[in-house]
Length: 405
Ligand SMILES: *Cc1c(COP(=O)(O)O)cnc(C)c1O
View 1: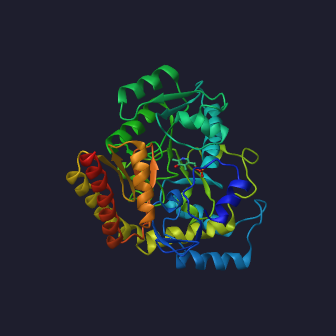
View 2 (view 1 turned 135 degrees about the vertical axis):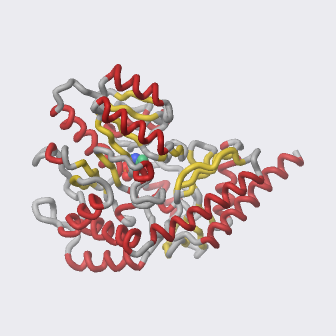
View 3 (view 1 turned 120 degrees about the vertical axis):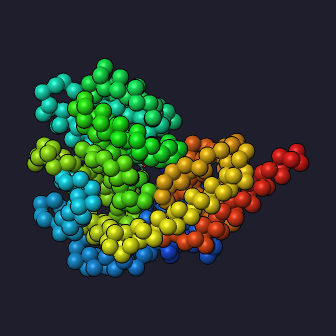
C-alpha cells in the first residue's frame, strides 16, 4: 500500500470510500498516479473538469488572474465575476446572479431566496417540492432537500417542509401543489447521484406549467447537469422552458470551487444588502476560470465537438446493451452524462469498476448497480471505443463466470 494511503488514513477523517490510487498529475483527458500509470478520466472529479485536466485556456486564465490578485472581498467590484455573471445570464434567463463557492452553498442561497420570495407573496406559501432520490447537497439546509435516505437519515435538518414526489407523475405533483401550497419546487433535469434519471422534456414542461399555474417558484438544480454537461449550456434548455431560479456549481469553476444561483429579473431585487453573503464567493480566480470555460464551450466550439462524441458514446453503449440485454438493462442520461444500469450484484459492479481501473479507465458507480460516466467534453471517439471494448471484455468475463459456475 502506498505510504500516502496510510498517511491519509491517519490524518483525514474517513468520510469517503476512496479508490486505491494516489494521483500525481493530470493532462488532457488523463490522470497519472504516483507510479506514472495513466488513467482515462471518465468522471472528471464528479462532473467538474468539463475540459479535462490542465487545459491550455484554463492555465492561461489562471496565470493572468493569479498575477493580478487572488482575493479582494465583496467590498470591491470584481471584474472577472461581473463578466461571468453577464455570460451566465446571456446563456440562461434574463436575471441576476448570486455567487457562492459550491453546490451545497448554491442550494442554501436558493433556499434563502425562496424564503424571501415567499414572504413577498400575499399567500402563505411554505415548503419545497422535491423529487424522490434527488441530491441537492449535504449542508443541513440542502440536506432537507436531498432525498437519499443513506445521506440524510442520521442528521437533523431545517424545519422547512418538503413534499416528496416521484418523477414523471404529473397528477401526484399537481395534488401536492393543490394540497400543500408549497413556495417552490427544486428539480435536477437529470437526477445525478439518484441514478442518472433523465426527466422527459415533456415532463419538464409540465413541471414548468404547474409551477406557473399554482404560483410555485421553479428552481432548476443544474449543479451537475449545467455547463454543457448534457449537450445544451443548461439541461432545462432541451425542454424550452424558463425557470425562476437556476443553481450552478461543479463544472463552472474549471476545477476551482465556484457555485451560485441565477434569479429571473422580476424577482432579482428581492435579495438586498445583508440578506446573504460569503467571504470567498466568488473567488476572482474561479470566476476567471469560469469565463475561460464558457468561452471554450460556446465561442471556440467545444460544446458542439463534445456533443458529436457524446452521440457516439451513447450509440456505442446502446449497441453493447443490444448485445448483452441480460447484463445491461438500461442506458440513461444525456450528452456527457450517462448511466449504464447493470443487472448484476452491487459487488459485481464494484468488481467491474475495479478491473476497469486496473486497465486504466476511471468510472463512477452510483446507486450500487449503475456505472456512471461524466466524461470531459474533450473526449475523443477513440477513447469511447477503448472504453466500450474494455467494458465488453468485463461483461463477457461475468457472463463466462456465470456459465462455468
Ligand atoms: C454535487 C451536487 C450538489 C452539491 O454540490 P457540492 O459542491 O458537493 O456541495 C448539489 N446538487 C447536485 C445536483 C449535485 O450533483
